[in-house]
Length: 117
Image (cartoon, rainbow, N blue to C red; front, top):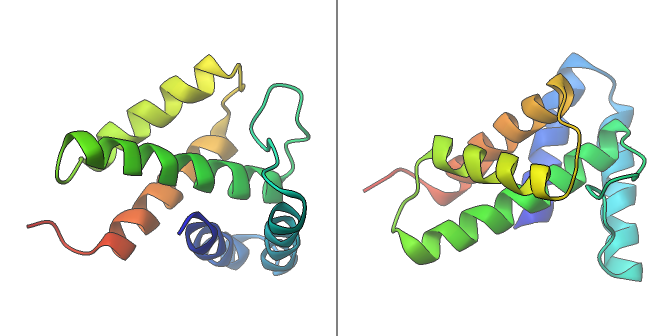
């Protein structure tokens, strides 16, 4: 599901930026499937847009799944807060781009998961 979130975020961002982002995100996802998990959000990682989209989308999905174990339907702000805490724990420097990707990824997760009950 994290791959789908990353693809949807890239498609939304490509409208604002360049269509090459969608292709680059697909390449990063294929690399991760071929070589195993890649640490896109670790301190010192190259933080180009495609890495940010793939890394943040994976983190958002993982946080959402973990929160679902504790509550039936976590609120979007709860997911964003936990993602930011995890980024801080990993010493990832947040900036406007990472915050925007985080927001888009959370929106896409909640769209994919359907309306709240």
